Image (cartoon, rainbow, N blue to C red; front, side, top):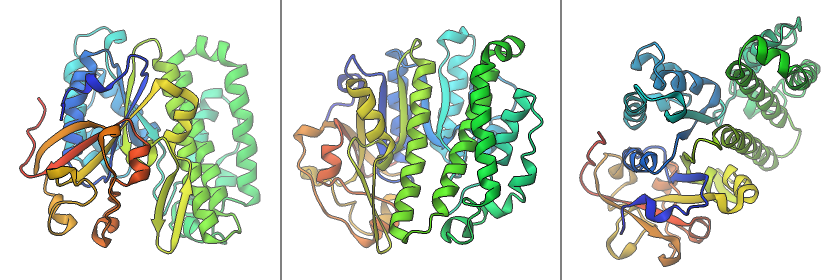
Length: 383
């Protein structure tokens, strides 16, 4: 197993995807941090994580020398509780130290490429739309049709199509206003950029894109279809927004250097994503499948695998329950060309409950390289 990431990144790569098979094993973030140090030395100038893009604006400001404390930015700058993860804290601290004293063009940027969506809930689009409205100095009444934020954020709004506000007359009013503001952000870009800055214009469109994405997500939640079709649409809607964000991030970073994107395997793999959700089998095009089809050779994929490494038995986690692997005891890790692997279809109820997806044939066919972690001792933190 080679551990030099540069050996696996072609010169054509602009967006390098690094996936993990579960969010609950801290060893992957520790290895990610180690690999990213090498990638920055190789010319990478940005990293994008599976977290809310709007919230992540605060993290980017912090790592570029902005005021504030690390504890605060970890609490406010991440969604999905990812600010509580040690690996993410170490990454943010390293980025701030690395960027200190460097010219702005040479600093490493931090992005989120997700929205503040959970599987069972999504927030109100109100604050995101109001941010864009205020930037454009409009008098649109958004609070009125949006109503109480809780009517959008409660889990029932996603779980029960009949309760969702996504198909209401008020939601349609918000969608019309959002579309109008999107047009205005472009038609008035010269005057607004001159009056504020390009960064402020981008901040406005990032907020508006998030608001539109949430409106779209809630609209899918309200669809009067059978559960399997509805949940498929929700998964596809979220990943479509992820892909849109990644393409936008690349347009911003194109002249500075490549970007590392880190997320769950299901969001980054090149082929169709498949997930069992109770009795439903969800099948949709993830962000990686979308971006990969559009970027072609400029998109490279490394997917994560966890378990025993003896004989490359990569489909089954280490002996015992899956919880046994969640102790940050990684004995070794390595990068393996996917072409050299034989897939394994092993899957247990315990691993499925923890969100672990084994190295099956679909996963092997969806990647260029496998990052395999073998359970043993704790990894050494990157400094």
